[in-house]
Amino acid sequence: MPALKYPSLLNPRCLIDGQWRDADSALTFDVTNPANGTVLAQVPAAGSAETERAITAAERALTTWRKLPAPDRAAKLRRWHDLMLTHLEDLASLLTAEQGKPLSDARAEVRYAASFVDWYAEEARRIYGDVIPAPSGDRRILALKEPVGVCGAITPWNFPYAMVTRKVAPALAAGCTMVLKPAEQTPLSALALGVLALEAGIPDGVFNIVTGDPAIIGKTLTDSPVVRKISFTGSTEVGRLLMRQSATTLKKLSLELGGNAPFIVFDDADIDEAVAGLMQAKFRNAGQACIAANRIYVQRGVYEAFSKRLCETVARLRVSAGTDEGADIGPLIDGSAVEKVEAHLEDALAHGAKLLCGGKRHALGGTFFEPTVIADATENMVLARDETFGPLAPLFPFDRDDDAIAAANAVEYGLGAYLYSRDQRRIWRAIDALETGMVGVNSGMISTAVAPFGGIKQSGLGREGSRYGIEEYLVLKYVCLGGLAA
Ligand code: ADP
Image 1: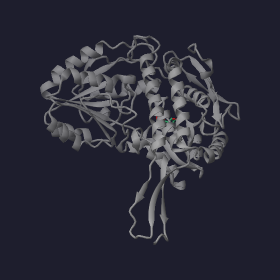
Image 2: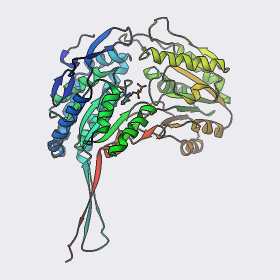
Image 3: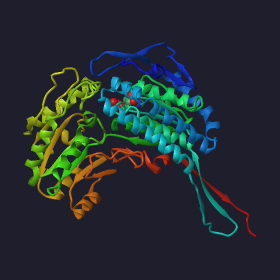
Image 4: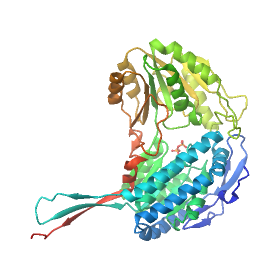
């Protein structure tokens, strides 16, 4: 475990009603460092009873939190944001220890995560309703916005701070309370945020964190009639399950699910910029991002030049433990993540792809994998349909613009897409035709708290970030004021 300047941030217990608790059974599970397999901490293996208690606490806290004037809720969120930045180094160390990403990326994630808290501290003051022109003179018609109520959130391991704050911050800003279940691989980051939330003065029961069996905690959240909303980021398979389970109590849902992002390089693109963009879109977090470029379509005219430049750049990436300040790529999260990359690579090579660089587990051993580029990928390869979630970049050559767009859309997912071109007409044709919730044009890095992040098709429902993100935690109440005839 890294030495922390503020050791209280390492707090491997559940947060229920402002109290730090072990599981009723006193059972725990291990959190390990993916860079070397060492056990970092033991975290409570909580289940249904603890989750019910957290829901009850959130229900109790809701009555006062939702009535707190917006500037007061905003001030507490603002304090939470400030504390995250005060403890940036410690938070980054915790993240690198349990998730593996390089420290520089971990610091960037803490800032990015804090930016959602900052943004929604401001949005808390701007939850406007409407006054609607009435159909008759004796009436006034209002649409009020109210918090949806107690929310459940389930988050993944790839961005363990940002995925938490982009749910909790808008929920709390809207006047909702929350029960969070973080990913079992990375609970320590979420629990550290819980420590800081209490220090920021966020009242007991407003933000609860339960660690343990995902299926049991998930079912308890979805079955509860008290929980009015579920926000989930993770696989499409689990998203569908949560939607099915939420049907009996008809919950409001936000689902940010799998992606399979196309990255299209047209032949008029600036090749240096396209390569730089791909390095971010493909290799950030070792490719473990739902908006990671998964299929790279390169037009025939620039295919050779782009492949060559890309391989030269990839060869300079330094694979190392995240604690090594020079690291560009850390370990993958676990053994099965490595096996998936290997399986996709093997299948692609068997179907005629050509290995350009990388191609195997890294000499460091464990879950380190060499950043890899393959050429001549085709649509019949597994990686064309399924997201690799690792440092494997397959290049698909194409001839006509329409071929690339059709291939880009020929998957069940619709989260992010990227394109590189200098021709405005070509750019707009592509933007209009792409079936995704987000498009990066001449940019490989599209995530920001001010923009609506989310997908269509099997990539999910709802948006996170921006002014749209808070709507996910609000419901409308229409008021008809009658009998007002003069
Ligand atoms: P990944 O493959 O990226 O781990 P998952 O969808 O399995 O994606 O995990 C995302 C989150 O969903 C994690 O917090 C995980 O614990 C949780 N999860 C996994 N299975 C279930 C389930 N049956 N019910 C509720 N949450 C689940």
